[in-house]
Length: 237
Image 1 (cartoon, rainbow, N blue to C red):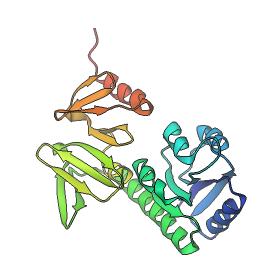
Image 2 (image 1 turned 90 degrees about the vertical axis):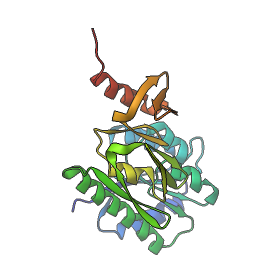
Image 3 (image 1 turned 180 degrees about the vertical axis):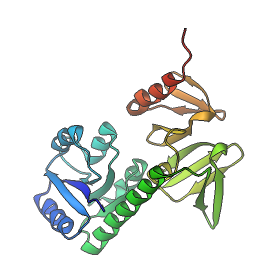
Image 4 (image 1 turned 180 degrees about the horizontal axis):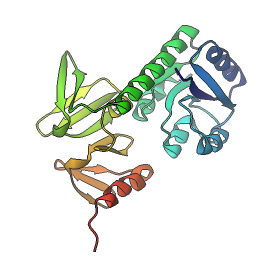
């Protein structure tokens, strides 16, 4: 298996050192760089793609969460912080895991294994034919959802609500994991919190998508991609 590339972003030298030591003990991870602030990491990420970002939240000038909101990176993000109150906001940004400092090597290994499993699942999904349905666990039931029935999904903390034409299903998972199971040609992310079925869009008005009787916001980070998809099918004179 190809190694997963990663970077460390943390303003504390001791934290960077510990993370570096932990990364060195994982055979399937390759460290590409360490950065003491978000600005330096941003410069690197604008010209480099990595699989995993170990990202501190509380940093001077630009926080880890602000960096994610600004860059809209596709990397798997593992947040590292001493402040548990940021967990909810982090999950809304589709992080893979949340490490609360100080964390042990055993907890670190669980997080990177989770990232590895997600990467392999995504690779399998994009490498073969897509199924016409998915299964998600909701409460004590496993629900089958036909993709043709799905309207949109909404991220709510560390849960995702999936809306079909007839019902709403809430599941304990991240938007990123749901997105990895859906065909990218048919489902489009319009906001960190919203993923829509393109075939179910009724209209686009200003910075909103009209779908299933609802108006969903299009964020600034996703507007160019939304309009690119729309323009591919836009009839012109």
